[in-house]
Length: 134
Figure 1 (cartoon, rainbow, N blue to C red):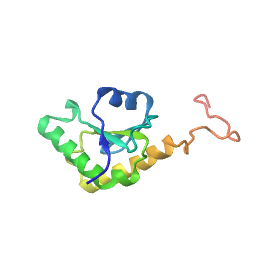
Figure 2 (cartoon, helix red, strand yellow):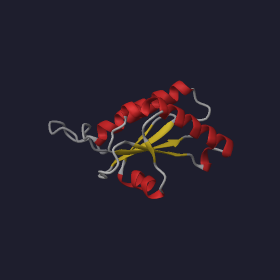
Figure 3 (tube, one colour):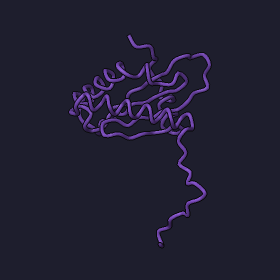
Figure 4 (cartoon, rainbow, N blue to C red):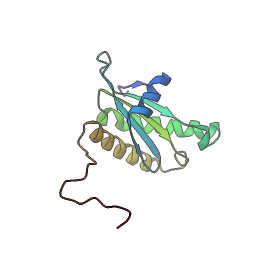
């Protein structure tokens, strides 16, 4: 059985969306935010499926597939002091399960690098900035 907690309160989902980092993939959008809470010693995960992706059957199937993929990889890859939100996209219910797993692994690894500050999007000083006029 995987050892991670679920996000249940709306404020946690909103905090991940507002002040966190987001990575869109082909089948999932991943959001994550670091937390300062010392009481919780493991990662937390939440799932979101909106009415935009389809009716209840499609939303439930998408959520089940996200939970199954997270059960396989989340515990090994997730940071212990972070909250993650997995958002289903329009093709999550119909996509190949291996593709969902691949997207989840890629997204979590990329989120972890960004949360740890390993990826800088600052242009090096030796390059001249490019403008639209040129």
